[in-house]
Image (cartoon, rainbow, N blue to C red; front, top):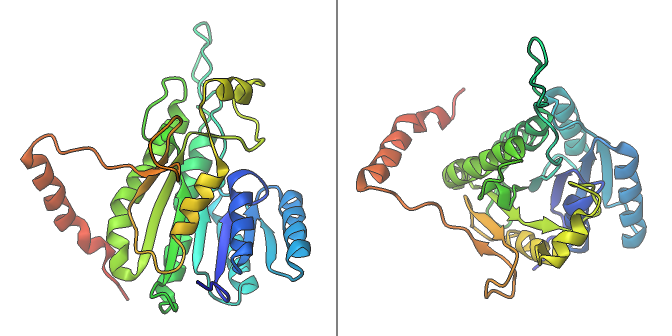
Length: 291
């Protein structure tokens, strides 16, 4: 299958999962613009991949995904760099849990909580997705029949709560809810939306304590980057999968690909299902085209 002529926008592309996804896309013949708050790092990745490809197939732009104006400016630059059309958008930029509310019982007054993790991992994903959806709606379907596709990254911590990671989990659970809901609405507009939910991926990014990866490896909690790339690749081209969360759990799941489509929770009562259908019918009008 040829993806020549297609284009992609990747946030967080200077490192980690986003960097690996960018490389996979370039190998497939897709032209990419990577966005990262670390502009120097993003430019270094672009230069490296361009040299490997022997052509100018990757560009870089500085973007703070927690800031709407920065996102708009970066996305507009990407549209120009990519020739006016973007086929794939990957909101992947993210950060790990930080102390959102110091435990100081003797403190006087009240301290504003640190919600930077929510701003990047939650709001940042929604900002990038909002830009993508608006751009896709202006585009005609491509040769595969789609106006555009979004594939973001949540986490297994967006499926299973970790008591000491409240804001990270809140953001990642939010991404899962966004994908499972709007991802089932968008296909009628020839747009797809999905999320990857990996356990621990060894990327070199500082997460937790200094021995985080070593201890995780001994506990068999590491999942392979190749598994994520396989799932991302499966969504290219003519795939009509949407509204799904790809779980990459640690341990043996009996699937050589290393991932499963994680089903939603079962309805507790028949009325619970009716409630969802009724609510959907009452709010669907908010997504109808307007002048």
